[in-house]
Image (cartoon, rainbow, N blue to C red):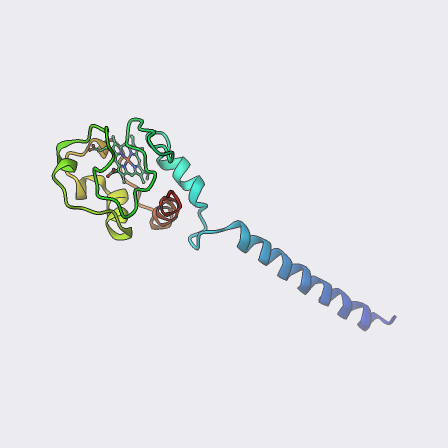
Amino acid sequence: MDTTTFALRWIGFAVMAGTFVAAAAAVAQPSPSGSDPQVAFNNHCRTCHSAEPGDNRLGPTLHGVMGRKAGGVEGFAYSPGFKTTNVVWDEANMDQFIANPNSLFPGSNMATFAGLSDAGERKAIIDYLKTLK
Ligand code: HEC
């Protein structure tokens, strides 16, 4: 085989390998933001929240939280703001709450959590919360 054929074969191989690597990377990153949803949750929320039903820690379980009324976990002692609220958790208010808990529930016991300014991380966490049903 002459040099040109050899070079073309290599280019073909390299393109195929590149496609494969790109596909593998796409599978490994379920969130468009680049953050892995479960890792983001573990990093920022798991100290105080479990994803298991009925498992209340410092904060209430977040199992099934999306679409549920705020303050709706039986047997958890919420701060007063949660007891009278009409908030039903959706993507928009959850994003606001994670960015700044006090902006939605002033005086909330979660205010010890300062809020998460990275929108990509918040999106990843909300994607994870949606899987908890
Ligand atoms: C320092 C501990 C702590 C951390 C960290 C924390 N939380 Fe909380 N969270 C709480 C507490 C305590 C409450 C109850 C608040 C109240 O009663 O005022 C709460 C309440 C909530 C609620 C309301 C639940 C309901 O039933 O309505 C949501 C949603 C929530 N947290 C999501 C998160 C998410 C998402 C993260 C991570 C980004 C997070 N929290 C990180 C302590 C924490």
